[in-house]
Length: 78
Image 1 (cartoon, helix red, strand yellow):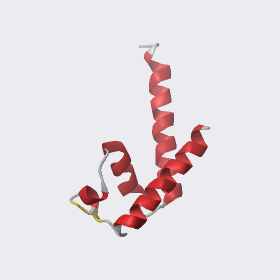
Image 2 (image 1 turned 45 degrees about the horizontal axis):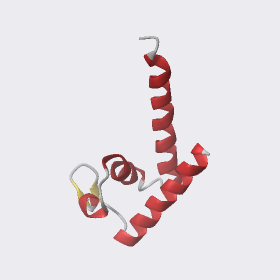
Image 3 (image 1 turned 90 degrees about the horizontal axis):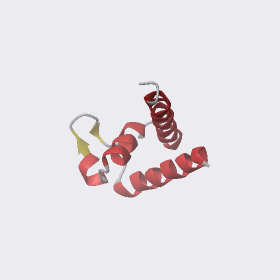
């Protein structure tokens, strides 16, 4: 159990970093971005999401925010 604690702690840190990067990219789109990158879902699968509702931006804008998410995440990692 003690050996697992550093890994668990790192996982929580990684999750927090990913969530922060999504919010920095777009507060409004953060839930969609998180679902897209963590579940590897395209815009088409998120456009009319049962849980989140209809995504409030078009395909081109969504992928722009997704690229911004990855840029924000990269800044946090490096």
